[in-house]
Amino acid sequence: MRLFHVSEEDNIRIFEPRIPDRDDLDKTVGLVWAINEERLPNFLTPRNCPRVTYHVGRNTSEMDKKKFFSSTTLYHAVIIESKWFEIMRTTTLYLYEFDTDDFELQDNVAGYYVAKTAQVPKAKYELNDLLLELIKRNVEIRIVDNLWDIA
Image (cartoon, rainbow, N blue to C red; front, side, top):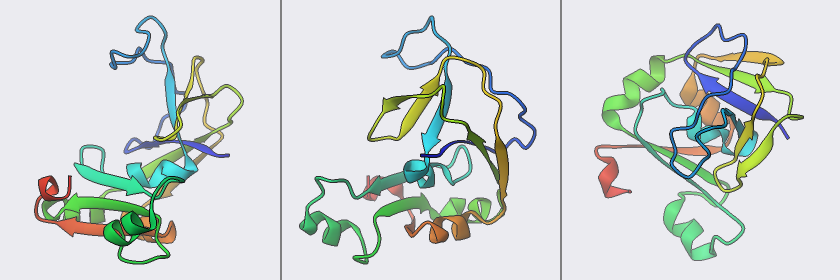
């Protein structure tokens, strides 16, 4: 398993635990968040880019696969609004990869992992073409006028 943090910042040397904003988590314990490689496509967009993402899970029916994907070879979709296309095309993201030792699963469906201690990335990757990165990961990309129609 590989774990990552995605950022538009290119110079993060250490990730310090932060108190979570979510009300369902203990606000006395700081966390470093990471995403597993399987759910990484959900985050390969500019930080504030509204998007709808979904993937085939073990309980996804054949009917839903046909309804929500344009090809039987695709298992993940990322949908953005057309006004974000140019921003998506020109944004650079940085993937910080972590050792997995200190992380524990926080949400299996979302692919979230957390660590309670500061983390130093073991590698950093620069992604200059986000659309290509999604295509390389066999992700269906959709550009729509309005996300509310698909949401």
